[in-house]
Length: 110
Image (cartoon, rainbow, N blue to C red; front, side, top):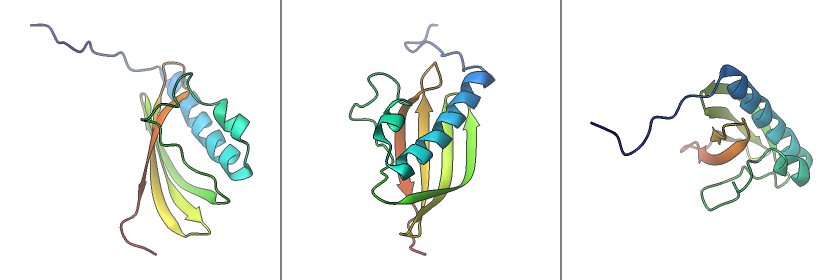
């Protein structure tokens, strides 16, 4: 029996670690308003409808935890000055660039 979806080989730890570095840099660039720097971390062609990029809009991202495995990096933190908790789930390209991001907010205000 064959699968219609071939199994993807997980990226090496070096690629995952590179992706974590890119996520950290993404928040730095967003907080400083450096859209060119942020854009340099994106996988070519990733600005499609499935990319929901974290928005800087004068906010500061205070990251409390980053968890990574394979091609996925999850960043948890608080957005200031709004004092709103968030979780960003990044998908990495095969080169460790940021392919997509989905943001989730805490359901209860603090």
